[in-house]
Length: 273
Image (cartoon, rainbow, N blue to C red; front, side, top):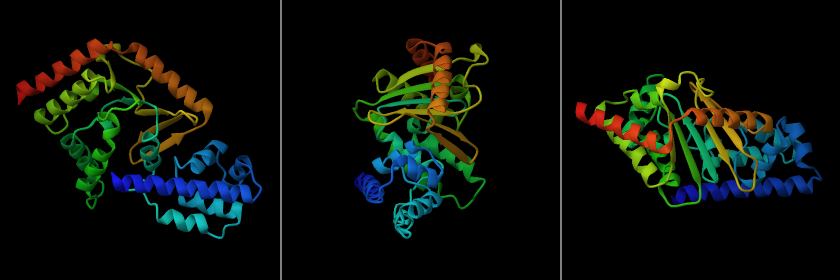
């Protein structure tokens, strides 16, 4: 945890220095964003320390501010332990005041047990045998405290029934995984809803969606595919994603019914074990 706090502090210092250099150059966030070829909102996230630029964007920042590679060099010391497409999400979720996650065929990473996560990450490792699976499992578990510890962050977990029924690692692992989700719901750490098979098509059928809202910054949306992911901060796109989530949530079971379904599925796996 101390290392994580140090990384956050360094990101904040990076952002503070970026803001200082921008003001000294007499530029607005909008003017810098034109050179970097991004939205002014993204520059705001950089300066607030919520997100780090990509290496290419860091070079463009240096060009915009005339800082002779300063931000590109500093960025190398702040490499994330997560995949490049997910690193901004790991940063954002530590500061979010509301998190909404839709899990289609998998349990969301923040809710996974270590055994479940290892099975999922091992399957991905087939694409690259050199993948340090155990290290990635530890990294994923390091994110979990934001759900398990008391806080004012609101977490919505909307799961497709497929995520409950897909056997990841066998009945014992699945039983433990589903009981963990049910325990979090009963402890009011998450607001759990399940989209049952009987609903048929729904607004989020196409895939995974992760929404985050903040007290002092615009909301963002994150979608992920095979080996890739994208963070959206465009207000129109984020609003569209929130609408899709709300529509799917309207098709889901109530919190009480969802909890009962998750517990029942866990007990089915226990009987198999």
